[in-house]
Length: 107
Image (tube, rainbow, N blue to C red; front, side, top):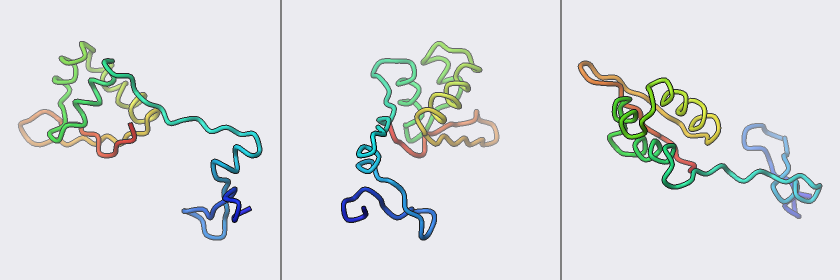
């Protein structure tokens, strides 16, 4: 099975093998394609702001999307982190607003 590329060694557990995408397809299990985001949506605007080197503050994100603060926070936690798998970090420096950034991109 390994020669046919149906299984491969697990990256996290020694002596454990896991099915590859080809192996799953051979037994009738289809894998979901990674989630993507459409262009021109408020979510895409949010990702664009967070992807900048300087990141984005909550006031910047609320102004760009027209959303309230709780909606921006919810979108970051739900849609961006959980659904899209993005890693978002925040940094607070004295005298400034908290700055949020995407540190890993899978979109």
